[in-house]
Image 1 (cartoon, rainbow, N blue to C red):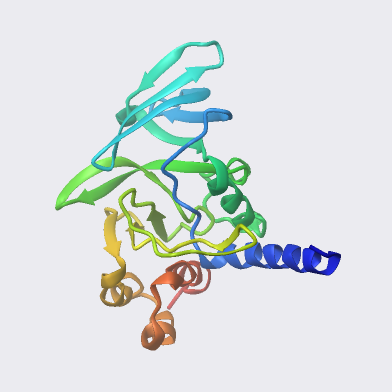
Image 2 (image 1 turned 90 degrees about the vertical axis):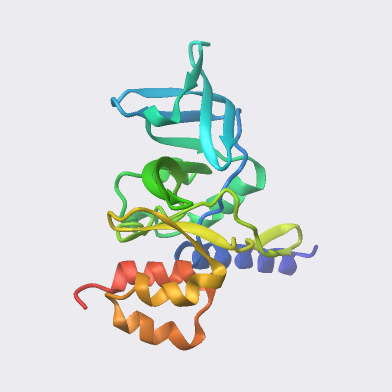
Length: 239
């Protein structure tokens, strides 16, 4: 690759990173690394630091977290006792997230999330009430929009199918769009939203921002939901 092509590719990657912060969610993760420290904050305020040894899910629910602490002790942690946690993502997921967080992190509106840790490729989990098949549960959910989540939070759906992604030279520039998420507006219970239902849900989610609804109702795109939420969070005030 000659110099001009290398420079062009670098500029494209930087531009993609700047575009990504406001217009797409962070990548959801199914796998995590044991090579970096995980940080788990318990409901009683205590913190556990160590390498992740096991992470079990059953039917989408986190059932067990096992961490080897810095003094060598292996601890089995019940998700019910966890307030929030940062788990290091593995491989390409970490690279994609680092690119997304390359711009405007200072403008984050969620002070409870440590942007410096997330920027190193960590997934952030927090406890939330969630509707699962008409039953309300309290679960640890992975937050996908930590920088603009004061009004609407978007959580990773571990069973969501993913559409195709686009890449150049082995670098993924626009990650595949998941076909479902869990969303939580204000203090409401989080619920699952699917791509096929977004057209009907859109005016309900953003009902207190008529200008946003008017702007997008005729050309509504599922893969722009992050942009809709970002705009709603930053511009739809006092309507």
